[in-house]
Length: 176
Image (cartoon, rainbow, N blue to C red; front, side):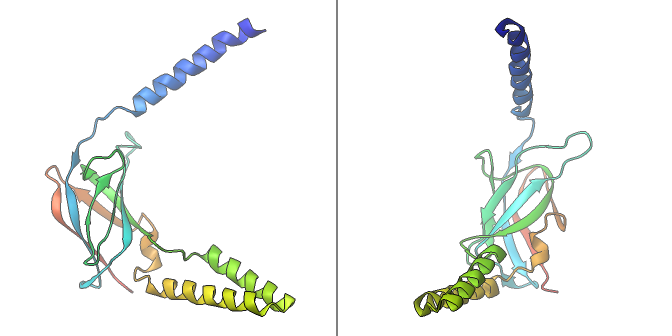
């Protein structure tokens, strides 16, 4: 029985090796990319993760690795490629954002609401106070997020990285 499975397993292992070998080829060029994220033309967007995802095509669905950065207090960023290189690959990218340093999420809010309900039903004032304090923290963090929710979608903004890269990529967001 093992002898019949051996050729099948060998073919599977070889197929996977060829697939992964094809995926690891580096037929892309990474160039330096830095810039600034602003809201309504002037307000710097600080402490958010910006993600540049290379836009694929019919011929090349995965043209290379994505790049990310965290904006500083002035909204400035320097991209770093997922493969460790500074910058981003040449070509068109879809740009999206992620919250950083935040424990806010809708799931966290739901958990706190459940904690409040449980504390109320059990009459545990200490647990109720703790849950209400946590709710206030989450609401404050939610309100501090200056990026409108629509910008967390990677289909909204596209940015083209040229052959020389750029040091002045300005990503302008609108609050409306």
